[in-house]
Image (cartoon, rainbow, N blue to C red; front, side, top):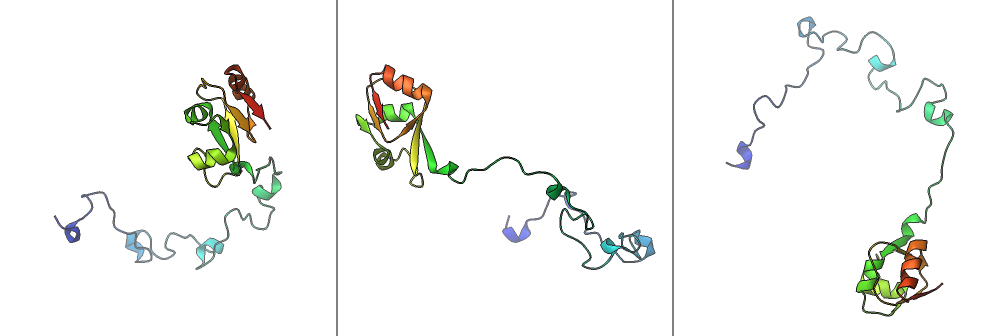
Length: 144
């Protein structure tokens, strides 16, 4: 088998529809475009959502919600990741050097995922309520 001999499986492809080739083809004369109107003309089509000049649906409906531009800047750090680090004092810079958080992150937040079995000191990291309780139960502390 060579690349120049490859062909699609029999019956998996169809011949291209040839319009405007006479009355016997079923797609002669107007070529399936009907009579008159913008959509029958060459190049006569409009942008998606255009409603003939009427205010389009996407502009009639009110805007809702808010998308934060800084949402992707915060990296989530699991308790199990902190437990695996050999450090007793953990800062955002230490997490960056250890490769726990992405180089694109600007800040970190510790979330309750996994367990922590030793006392650690967190500095400059945001912490969820559950993670705070777990760290303090293990004898650790958090300084903002």
